[in-house]
Length: 278
Image (cartoon, rainbow, N blue to C red; front, side, top):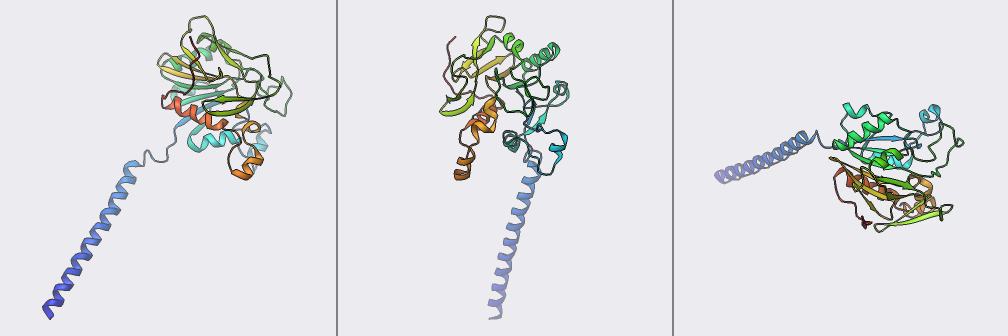
C-alpha cells in the first residue's frame, strides 16, 4: 500500500512538473514574440500633410487649438487612427525624414524651386496623393482673399502641366451638390473638377480614371494620385449627423474612398476604375 501511494505521488509530481514546464514555455514564447515584434507592432506608417484646409488646426487660432475641447477635423482624426500624420510646411523635411507618402490637400502656392524639388522627390520613388480643387466651397471664417482662408483654387497647375495633365472645371451643374459614382461608391461633393490630357513633356504618364475625378500617374520611379476635388474631405458632404446617430456610420463613403487611395498608393496597388482612353 505504501509503495502504491508513493507511485501515485510520483506520477502526480511528474504531471505537475510537465504542466509547469508547459506554462513556462508558453510564457517564454509570448515574451519572445513581444520582444522580436516590438519594433513593428504599434508603429504607424508616416504620412506628411501639407494643406491650407483646417484639418489638423482650426481657423480659430492658437487659443482655440490649445483649448481643452479642441479637436482636429474628423477627416484628419480618421487618418490619424491608422497613420502618423505629420504637418509639412516646406519640402526640406523630405531630405531628412523618411516618409511613406505625402499628401497635398489644397496646399499653399509653391515656388518654382519647391515644384522642382517635389517633382524630383516623386521621380526618385516618392508616393504622392493630391487633392486639388478648382473652386473650393469649404466654409471659412474669413473672406475670400484673406491669407488665413483655404485657397479658393489650386495653385499646382504648373506641376500638373509638367506631368501632362490639366485640371478643368465643368461649367454645368456646379452650383448644386454633386454625386459621383466611383468604383461602386457614391461620393458627395460640390464643384468637382475633371482631368484632361495636355500636350507636353509628360503626356502619357497619367491614366484618367473614375469619371475623370482621378488621375493615376507614373512619374519616374514614383507615383502620384491626383484627385480633382478637395471639398469631398469636408464633413458637410459625408458625415451626415442624422444618419450617424441612427446607424453609427457615415452617410456617404467619401473617407472610405480616400482610405482606399492611401492604401493603394502606399502599397503600390492598382486603383480600380475604368480607364479613359489614350
